[in-house]
Image 1 (spheres, helix red, strand yellow):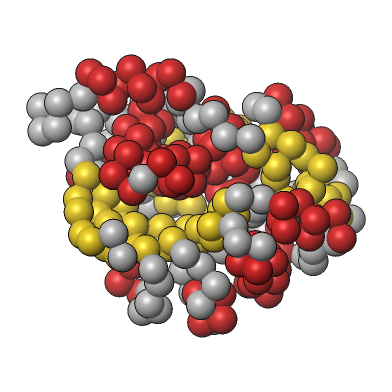
Image 2: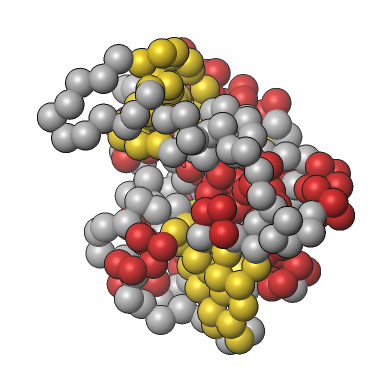
Length: 279
Ligand code: RIB
């Protein structure tokens, strides 16, 4: 469950500093949105996925709905709201680092309907992020929690009052910056470390899992792929899920754009097999 955006990506020599204007070497458009990216990553990794979220009643909304459908993601829970779909402006530098600004559009203007509530009450794993209204995420977490599902929250972007929501989640997935700002106790905390893999702390102990070394071209969406694969594999054990998520996140950086960078289950298995930590 989460956001669906159209990403406009500008390739720049250096990310703009505050007050600075920079010229882009290239511009491209991709499907995106943390929710959609994570749903597609989970579906490609082998999960049966139903998406819950909102698009606008514009052309972008139709294209984004088709993108999810074409990737095997169920769209019965994708509602259409009057007004524009979500969009994002992304700058990417030659090392693959990025900045992202999101205009929420439909993602910021919806509430759960009965069909969406039924989908959530039926799921085994609810995976969310924070590009949707926090009350909507909290209501979904309540439903999933009550039905015994695993609730995973990618606490991104940070900010807002998530105290009530935090009390309903099983797994928090955050990058290091987000983790430093998230002070709630959760049963499982997974911190992504970029090229260095991921760190786990929780009722399963503590551990750090490395990532394969790759020549990243675009890190946008890599965290989403990590979260989608982690959710897909969570029931198989923490170590197993972390390993596959780290490998998938690394593979995602080899592809430009966030919405189409997730590897298949077979590609994750092959890369995991070939991967020698630290090489
Ligand atoms: O995590 C990357 C995503 O963040 C982009 O696709 C953009 O749309 C924003 O949601």
